[in-house]
Length: 305
Image 1 (cartoon, rainbow, N blue to C red):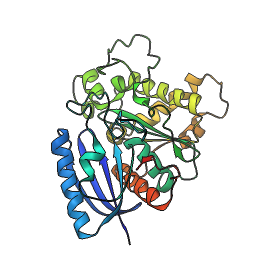
Image 2: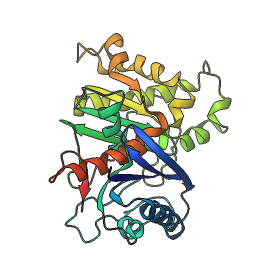
Image 3: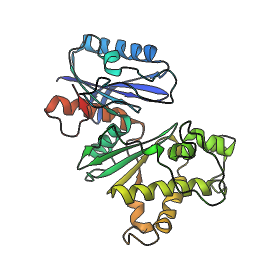
């Protein structure tokens, strides 16, 4: 069998896998530090795998913003990211090494959306959003089973939200202050609470504006994209499972009866936790690799070469 490999390049860690979608045979994690060090370590692992059994296709699922247009001069480069040292890093050149294989590139959240659609909580829902809430916030969007790219790719984490009256938390996003990421990410919650979120009781009123902010994000996604399903992953809701139902409970009030089928019961099945957990991104990278190997042009497999 021809070998597939995948990389999920995240803000804090990079995960390399080989196997097939839904069947990860080997997984290696390394810290995401500076580009030369991180990409160099990853390339060495890929080279070792390639020497054992040639890699036929590689899927790269990267944090963003990243240039996905193959016609662009900076295709495969990290753009204006807040992560120090990574602006301008060329991912494909740094990872390909001596491998002569097909490479597919997409965002980490688009890849995770593909994995949840093919294997997880969004099966049968070709129009869906994968939302990850962790160190940052990202949103992968599928329409008819294909990731949305457009001029760049969706940057759901940086939309602005209607704030709860009296909530004066300034947010932590270095670009926008109180965008969704600036209000709801792990670092945002630590700054808001002035301690680790795990130290805040699930019944504490401090969660009220947080759950309302998250509900505003859900309402925005429902009204603009009409997803059949919103799948929520990441460490914030994973470690604070009470936050998701609290936020869902606010959504009907925010929608104010405009969408009659968006009541609490239906939203409980439309907005759901991720089924694949930490394996969504790595499996998504393998989906990218499998798709680019299977067909040209690739159906819903990101940008490629």
